[in-house]
Image (cartoon, rainbow, N blue to C red):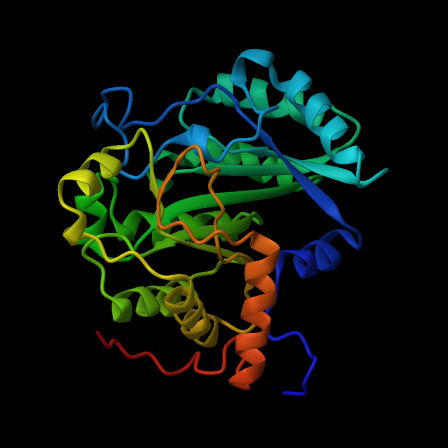
Length: 314
């Protein structure tokens, strides 16, 4: 690979390929919940989750969907004018309601003239056939991406963080979404308690063989207001949180084993300081991206270099 050539496919490349222009995601709180919060499976949620830690100020469900879109556009128009937007239903499980409720909320967003389509973050166990039929109809004319929170491909790890679903349902739903013409994104967290380095890398290689278009990765962060923060305070030795240098090396390995045509939408997360317990790197996302590019170039490596070599090493 030539020096200076892009060494992995990023989200900007996805936007150019699909829309031929820059498109901005607007986070929207659609007022949904989760089955492991409302008592269906539990009430405490995933041990790592505090939705307030990653939702922007304009993303508040009590403001209504149209108002959130308008406020989000005003926020981004300061820097980018005239672009289209994707309504990103982000907090909680955005397919967990009756079809009537889901359709009303999604269609309110799609009525806005600046909205080009939907990105729907959800749990795979809340994506029913009825919902897929509905989304397939929308996707005939508009962009629809289903973002599946999978988090790990290790069953014991999913159980430990109170995820409430297994790997098989995630793989099945990813396939059903793809067969219906929907874009599919999978989200994984690197560093969850009980998951070895080799299992994380293997998880990236395995999920790359699913019929997905995008992959989001980020480091485990211990967030205030979560059960995991309580666990970390009581037993910090049970966690192996990555240093910045260690995580850079891990991401390089993950990129090397990712499918070559997969778009890597995100590789790191930056939680507001008020919510973050650990690890505290003091690095912004764009700074991490620059460091990663240098690391890939130094090692003369790139996305998919070892895609066909599946090995698990601890």
